Amino acid sequence: MTTATRTARPPSTLLTLWRSTVGKKAVMAVSGLVMLLYLVAHMLGNLKVFFGPDEINGYAHWLRTLGEPFLRYEWFLWIARAGLLAAVAAHGVSAYQLSRRDLAARPSKYVHQRRRASYATRTMRWGGVILALFIVWHILDLTTLTVNPAAEHGHPYQNIVASFGRWYSCVIYIVAMLALGLHIRHGFWSAAQTLGANNARRDRALKLIANGLALMLTVGFLSVPVAVMTGVVK
Image 1 (cartoon, rainbow, N blue to C red):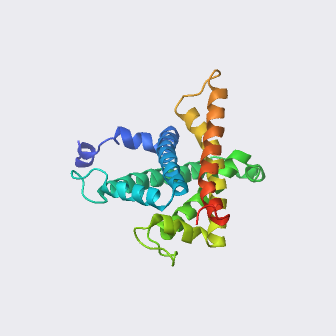
Image 2: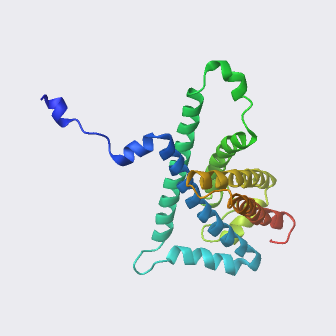
Image 3: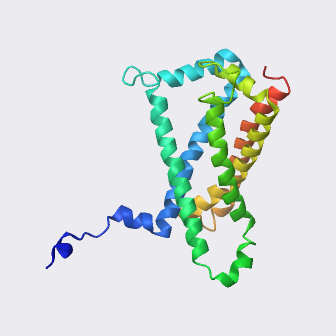
């Protein structure tokens, strides 16, 4: 027996699963559900802007002190951000690799048919690109405050008003939230199928949940820039 034969090891179960199409779809589904839970919590936090500066500024301070004294100041936020970043990366990488695998599996004579991809497929792909670009903008705008010259650290209410006081910031946000709604609508249903949650009896309920979540999050997120633009929040 050669040294190469003795040292060769079969790939781990997790690696084998990740390399499979089913595994990548499962990663997409689970990471998507993690991001969905975050979005619901984030939207509820954003709606505190309607109750005045003290409400949302106090909420932001509470997030930074959550877990004290076991955790130090802002540790919870950084742990949450790291987990969310991992979910976004896993979702994006698996989506890209699945898309490449899908295109590679089709013969070249069907090129014209690939261009006629389904509405849901086009929405998911382009929606993902739009949302990835928006995440970068959103971080620079309301987290690092790099592109928000009127913002001040530690004053989220004032920063939100400063951000949506610019017309182009509102346009970017509105386009992204519409893309998010469509992405959730199709993504939730796709995740349910991947995880085996759907069947003939549940299909109608799952579609209603997908539509309801998409509508709730879209309206909830869009209500903030609309409120600033109309002077309800100022």
